[in-house]
View 1 (tube, one colour):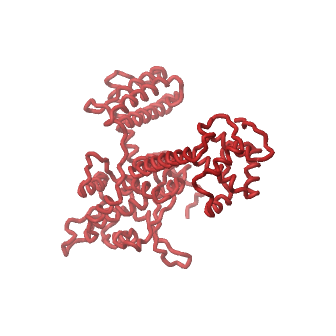
View 2 (cartoon, rainbow, N blue to C red):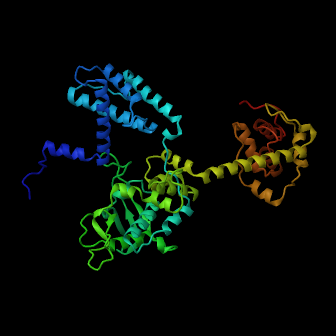
View 3 (spheres, rainbow, N blue to C red):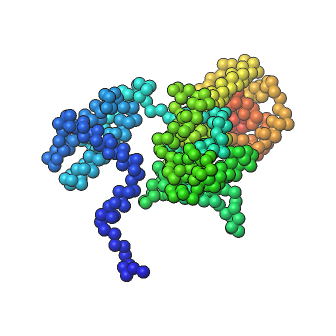
Length: 476
């Protein structure tokens, strides 16, 4: 046991630990962007030292925001402009504080407003060009998804891994690059209070894009459940089979491994090599599979992230609410999942069908009401009007559909009070409900649904039907 109560880590070790918090791909991206910014400044003869004013720095960021280009001289996509400018501005801010003790905030300070505007103006110009807009990964239909599953044989190293990847990727709503970082430590077989397996496997990657740990939360657990309907694509079974094929020579804890080409040979060490699947190789899995089943990948953007998009779409169709969706997907808020829903053509068609159906129903109802109503009510002033009791009675009596038992049953339940009712109007509405004056309530309901009159007129009808109520128009 150590004689020291507290830790003995040096400042360098602490700094290294702080640095290691940042993901490697984030570090690489920042370094790449900064190198391009340095080349830009070299061509422009811009110098960064303690004597450079913040006014000059604002001008440099303004120039960079509008004139950054790819190596081949072409423009970046509009979303890349935002990312590169923001990363550069943040690094420049840190450089001047750490090296010269100079503080400024390019994201807030009024002095840098022109720089921010130049970035936004460049993005706006690029957004006009379809090829420069940001595009999200397309959703796979269930038919396409099932076709992909059928092309793989789980009795081969490559087929087994990809079968599990597509099933787990959908059910766990994996992000595009999440699979490549998955380890066997992220999975844990669940047991009940008696220590017996429940048939579920808990998955928790601990850290994610929206759960970075430290002062932020960790990721919530998700579960893979046994598929009793179709055991062929049961994620629990496939996962256990993958573990059983990991030879004793495997020392890496990464789940997805490079297949061993000689796995069939008697002298082979096993199905897999002791090396993870490369990021670039794994990044092509879904795109390659989509092309194999006949999807035109030149017209549709298909990537591993398409599994996540498909999961959100299918869960939303199944009636899962947005709050539940973000628990499953790990999104930061409900606004983040809206782009996924907008991608789905089926959702759009459903909305259009409802719109057309409502429009047709309203037109038929209006025609029906126009034919039923006495001439005294045609035309009816839909502004601030008062309708007499005998007119309302005429509408009720002339209705082509007499009140039946089902009408009374539905109307006898508490009805939703028409909008914009004053306190007094609401009181009278409930009086009719308590008095079981179903004919009056049904008449008002029919007028409202049929669009015979305006909302204000409905309110006045309600008051006209109260024997002791004077004629008046409600204040808005």
